[in-house]
Image (tube, rainbow, N blue to C red; front, side, top):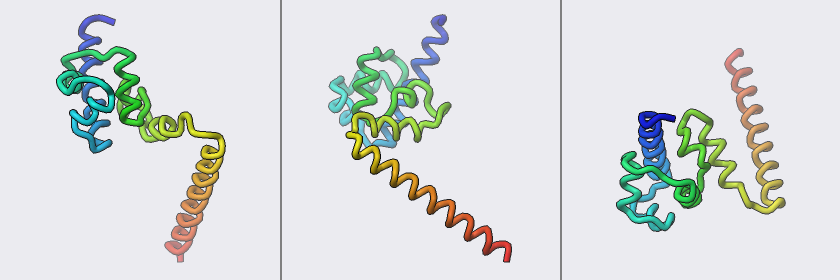
Length: 123
């Protein structure tokens, strides 16, 4: 990877970090405190002026409860799914089974609702 690519990646990751922080309703100071970094370093990361090590990336995604992919790739991947996976990581088996059942129920209800409304529209 040449220097231009590194700078572009640094800027893209900074933008993705900024957007993730806003979605989490955190100030730079709050995120910095949660991640154990200085507010000025957080600012420099968001502006793409500094690169983040893998250790700092891990601290940031843990503080934001998101996946590292959402910082590295942004919206190129399904960020919502990745974020849900990150939130579920480390949960006990009983919680995962409960959540899986709830998601299946919600999706089945969504399908039933959509089918009913399609049928009503045909009448």
